[in-house]
Image (cartoon, rainbow, N blue to C red; front, side, top):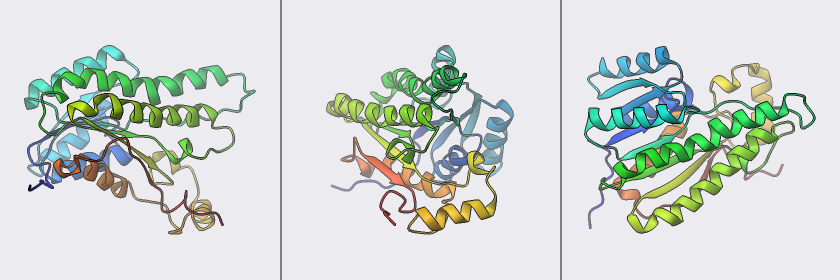
Length: 255
């Protein structure tokens, strides 16, 4: 059988698409012919990305979305389906930084926020999208976790725990939804040049990259976006439950 390597005409809802990896994912999918729902907690960022794509003749619409708001998730999912006529691909990308020492006074606040945005939002989006994915010929879910789910850093237990939850959710849903042909996969980005790493100096970034990654550099958001695209191709129909590091060899390197 001939399996397509094109997302032409498919509809993708991407969270956190106003910047960083989410924006790169929206751009890659739109360039490949997908109809893209650009969602972000920043309305200005979402509309800027969608307008830039539409100015190139690509198919995109923007919706503000705070993924901690369960009602808003349902509303935006329904609006996406109404606008594009269906939903084929869900990319759970929206994220926040959530670092706190275990004995920090604000630890519980950071913990609750981390789990709400980084994990609970994922399952809420899946549940909102599921009726529409079931109607798709090529239903795909990609959850964005982190290499912090695979090996942690000091003072990041809220973030690491939530991201580890994303990998567990991915595997469980892959098993549960596999009989329906819905694939569920997870990407674990390593050090990527995004807003979360902009606070680091170039010298500090390069030192870390030289010490920890095989490729001796930080990744570009588009490099993560292309892995996301690959998992969403119709031809990727036998890949599910995978947890894939996109980390420049960080997890492979001992010394």
